[in-house]
Image (tube, rainbow, N blue to C red; front, side, top):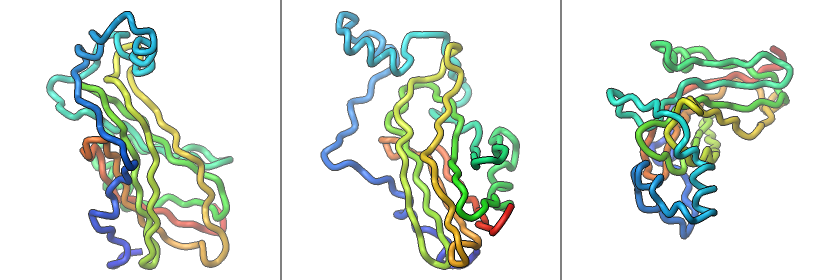
Length: 201
């Protein structure tokens, strides 16, 4: 579907904020690694972020903090559909060629990504789906991650499962705009895509 109703306002993609939550003071990787080594809970927290293991994979010629490597769609009983974003024109193709999802089927999105240079704090996935002028917004927390190393070269996040609409009113063409954004309100990737809910595959 195209038309005015399918185009979200910039405010539509603003992430929701938790009341009372404040973004912590920024520290470098070295500062995190040098935090009190005698503090057991702090040591476990640093281990959970993957700090201090493996050699850095950060590319000094690429200043991006997050690189989304691929986007995927898992549908129960079907082969995964994976879009490799390193391929030139991949996002444009994603927008031009809608996914087909059978009505009532269970599906979920997934993303592979790489973090570099500094700790990534509170990355979220925000999505606005439009159909016939009606918008539906969802947000999913992805989390905080340390830069990837040889011990952990990339991350994968699988989102919550969803059930496709069904029935005559649910079937049709849907357009979506999605973005990956962090606690600093820095957008790491924003893209348009579409899907068709059909009676069958």
